[in-house]
Length: 384
Image (cartoon, rainbow, N blue to C red; front, top):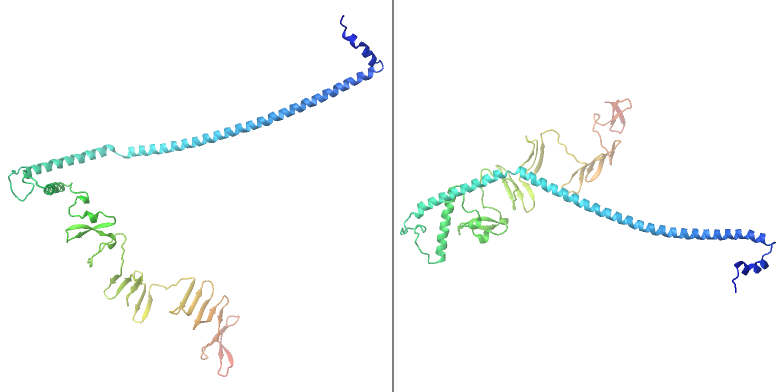
C-alpha cells in the first residue's frame, strides 16, 4: 500500500473545519496570539535575566567586599611591619651614632700609652724591690742567727702557724717597700691586720678605733662620731648636721638653747633677736617685760586681718579687716567701728572738759565751730 502525502491525510479534515468565511477571522487571531506569546516569552526572559543578574551582582559584591577587606588587612600588616622597621632603623642609627661619637671622643692611643706607662713603672718598682730584697735579705748567710725571721733562709717550720707567720711578715715587708716607692700596699680593708673584719664588714657600720684591742672595729652609724667634749677654735661643717639632743649657744652675757624635747628655740632673758645689719629691729624679754624696738624706718605690720588680744586668747582689744571696718573693744565688747561713711559708736560719747575743748563742727562753707555745753546745759558755738 502506497503512503499518502501529508496533505492527503489532513485534506478532508481541514476542509470540514475551515470554511472560506472563517478564514479571515482566524488569520487575524494568529498574529495576536503570536504577539501574546512573544510578549510573555520576553517578560519571562527579562525576569529570568534580571533575577540571575541580581544574584550575580550580590555574589560579586560579597566577594568584592571580602577582597577589599583582605586588601585592607594586608595594608595594615604592611604598615605595622614598616613602622617596626623604621623604629629598628632609628635605634640602629642611634647606636651607630653613639659608637661613632665614642670612637671620636676616646683617644685609644692615649689610653694605650698610659697603660703601657703604668706597666713600665710597675716593672721598675718590681726590679727595685728585687734588688733591695737581694741586697738586704738574700745576701745574708743562711747561718745568721738574729731576731729577724726572714734572715735565716734555711730554717724549717714545724707548724703551719709558724709558716703563716713567716709568710705574713714577708708580705708586709714587700708592702712597705712598695709604699716607699709611691705605690703598692694594701688596697682592701680585708688585707689589714689591725681591722676586726667580723665587726667592720657589716652594713651601716663605720670604723672606730678600739685601744683595748688595738684594732679598728665596726660601730653603729646611728651612734654618730661623737665625743664627750669637742673643743675647736673654728668648726667648718660642709653639708647637713643633725643634732639629736639639746643645743646650747653660750654668749658672753646671755645664752640661747634649742630644746629638743619641746622643739622650742629659747632665748633667755636679755638675749635679743636682731634684724638688719645695724640693729634695725630687735625683740627681747628682760625682767618682767617684753620689748620690740624699731629704729630702721617704719614698723609696718601687714595682714588681711590683724588682731590684738589677751594672752589667754579670750578677749579682743583691736580688730582690723582688709577693705572693711576697724573695731575697738572694751572688756571684750565692741565700742567703736569705722564704716564707709564715717564711724559707729556703741554707748556714750564723752567729749571736752572746758570751753577750750569740745566737738568741732564744720559748716557747708568750710567754717569750723566749736560746740560748747555750759554748766546749765545750754549749748553755744564759737568759731575756731
